[in-house]
Image (cartoon, rainbow, N blue to C red; front, side, top):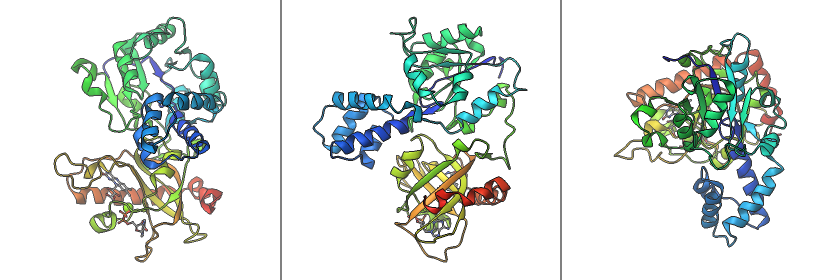
Amino acid sequence: MAVPIEAVVFDLDGTCLSTEQLIVDVARRILQRKGSSLTKEALEQSIGKPPLDAWQSTIDALGLEQSAEDLYVESEAELTEHWHDASYMPGALRLIHHLTQRGQTASLKIGLATSTPRAVLAKKIQNKPLLQRVFQAVVCGDDDDIRGRGKPHPACFLKVCSLLSVEPSRTLVFEDAPSGLVAALEAGCHCVYVPSIANDSAEEALSEAMRQRVTRIPTLLAFDPVAFGLEAFRDTVEGTIPFVEHPESVIRIRGTVVKGFGRGSSELGIPTANVDTMAVARVLPGATTGIFYGWASLPDTYPGKVYATALSIGWNPFFKSGDDDVGSAAGKKTCEPWLLHDFGGEDFYGAEINVLVLGFIRPESGEFSSLEALIDRIKEDGEVTKRVLAGEAMMAFREDEFLRGQ
Ligand code: ADP
Ligand code: RBF
Ligand code: MG
């Protein structure tokens, strides 16, 4: 990076906080009260859209009679009561901790530029002490000089830079939305873009000059501070990011084993127990992808047993090809734990599966020269998983009651 970074500015929703999860939960409850229920299709149709459009898609997908406006008003009212339940986006807590640690580039400043009104911000960070104290400047959507000039207008980023007394050209913005990306770039900042919407192509609309100031990553877990002249993370183990230092970052997925593309065992020799998408959507933001590790259990099928697992969450980009549709993977996100155990040819479709995700190995990749290269890499992920899980803190999680079905 040619220019030193003096300030880091975060967007809130979808970047620091996983508010999408909350919105899905509220939608689910509202639909239940209407005698309907949120289906996988309806969810897939609406995810990533602005609230009114999302409700319209849901109504269309479920064939409901209510108006999108009514459901929107009802959901906003209910969300007010639940904002404080929002969890951190994967990697957000760790990153913000890291940026504020002693020894970090001495004078690095940290700001927040959110479209959220100030009163709602207070609710969203109500039980997030770190977010309450870490920002030296906070700009909200209803500030006098910002109202009516929301993102993609650069006003909020220009203001936060001015409050922090830094040049936008020395400021790094973290954003998850196309409008925020444009706002940050128009302000003259650099932007780490962590899209919330899967398969988003926001950069295509940017000028070449602007694109040079964008670094896209699939999740904050893949952010490398060194590339921006900031201190390296010091918490990695075997090149992976363990979640155990921040227990709230541990991800608990409970779902049903469903049929996948049918190529895990046959094409790769690596069977993966695909977990139903609804279960995954309940606990992980729609755009979060990556290769992770943890412990898994099948409490009804193999009671009392706990298995090491390397899992892939994402779009299987290696199988997504432009012209010939080799894998029909395009557009379908999967969560696929490979249990590092020989089940002797048995399958367990339909079983309940618990996956306690304890760390991040790497982003998923489509850049393998051959199928063999992908297989080798997955096997390496399996080896890394076994080594890391042998650590004491990791072993302790075998006893986690979540794995016993609680
Ligand atoms: P699919 O595409 O339907 O997921 P796979 O070839 O990936 O097909 O096979 C996965 C199935 O094999 C799982 O759903 C599970 O029932 C079974 N299975 C057997 N051994 C394992 C293992 N070690 N890890 C994961 N799944 C396994
Ligand atoms: N698929 C990819 O396209 N790219 C990857 O980098 C990738 N990494 C994986 C890592 C692990 C540990 C596992 C279990 C699977 C991975 N997969 C990856 C998914 C793989 O393509 C998928 O399981 C099979 O195609 C069966 O659906
Ligand atoms: Mg599978």
